Length: 186
Image 1 (cartoon, rainbow, N blue to C red):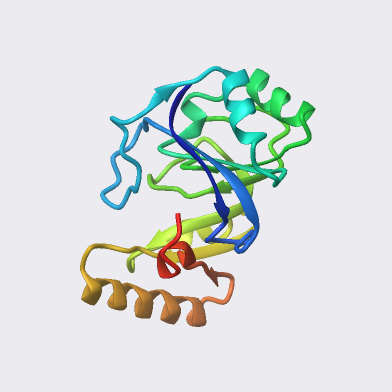
Image 2 (cartoon, one colour):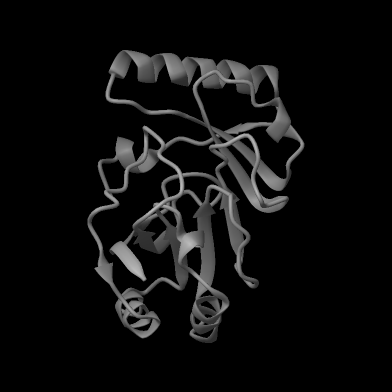
């Protein structure tokens, strides 16, 4: 698999915010989002066993598959290996591709108008003021809006204000912020 990096930190976003996790960041994506924080040209090819060896260095049983887009590379064999080794598997996906079975927590962050997934534990929409009505009734336990962050502090403040106003007017949604950026941690 093409792995951008494996690192240990805390989850900075969504429901599991603050939870220590091992992050497996995959390279490659089927979309090209302007706010993506993954360098897709940088990766090392690792086998399932090499990935397992690396993540077993860290004390947390929570493992987050993120990207890029992890659904382009993972398969049932990989998920079964992680489960057999006591891992609690989280995935952050754009939802454009079906997923293997037995993933414990699915966070779908749709970036296109249609996606393949029809349910998840959590939906997290990157918000910049666009119409998100179609996602309000998506079959998820938790519904989050996360203000889009850019390189422009003024635009970031505007996105935060728009997001908070929208959530206050539409209480189906909750706020997700990227606390890892605020705390300057990976």
